[in-house]
Length: 66
Image (cartoon, rainbow, N blue to C red; front, side, top):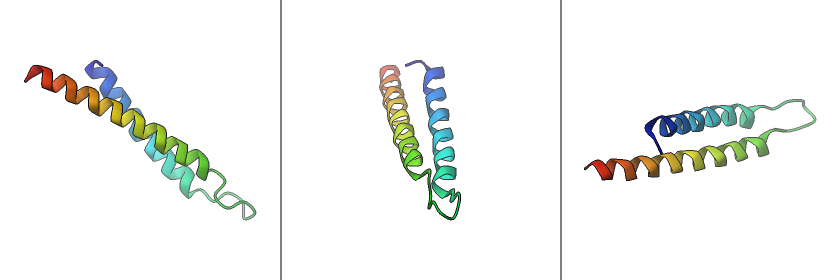
């Protein structure tokens, strides 16, 4: 991956973590307890995958230059 793609994926991962924190804590109506909790967990999973891919790409690229 190029540097811009790594940074973009890391920023997207951070944004997904922020959105998932909001969805995880959102209560909604009194009848439905935490209706977006499943969506928040999927956002955390996708954000984690993005962060792992970007980190591995950065580590491979930095070892090539050393």
